[in-house]
Every structure is written in C-alpha cells, then in structure tokens.
Image (tube, rainbow, N blue to C red):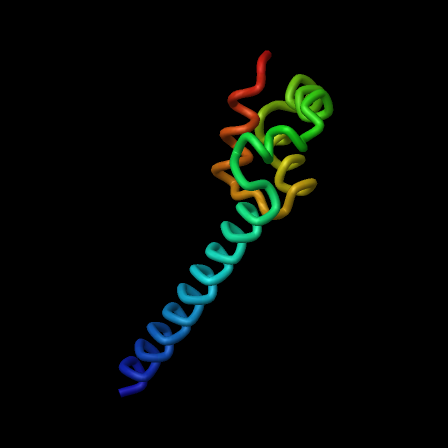
Length: 88
C-alpha cells in the first residue's frame, strides 16, 4: 500500500517537473526569437573575439558556458552551435 502511494507521488512529481521544464523551454525559445529574431541576429550580437579567446585558452565547454552566461535566452544547443561554427 505504501509503495503504491510512493509510486503515485513519484509519478505526480515527475509530471509536474516535466510540465515546468517544458514551459521554461518554451519561454526561453520565445524570448530568444523575440530578442534576436534568428540565429544570425544572435550571432551578430555576440563578442566573437572574447568567445574565441576563451575557446583557445580553456576549450569549447568553457566557451559554451560563457555564451550561456552572457546570453541567458540562448539554449545549450544554440550556444554549442555558435561555438562550433566559430573560425579557429
């Protein structure tokens, strides 16, 4: 009986967290498109030389983190794409 209740609570919590995460993702995407309009619009606003410097000194992960920290509406996938498309 207790296991059934625990399972139901776990399913409920998981569902609530999933819905909240989905809502946050949608808000982030909408904010990104409202702010930048496109990936190219975002790219034009980033300090490319600063990101390249971090990438050279500390690697891709640190550069992606910098982009995410400086531009909070950018998804992890977009930040990764940006860093990977930078010239060496």
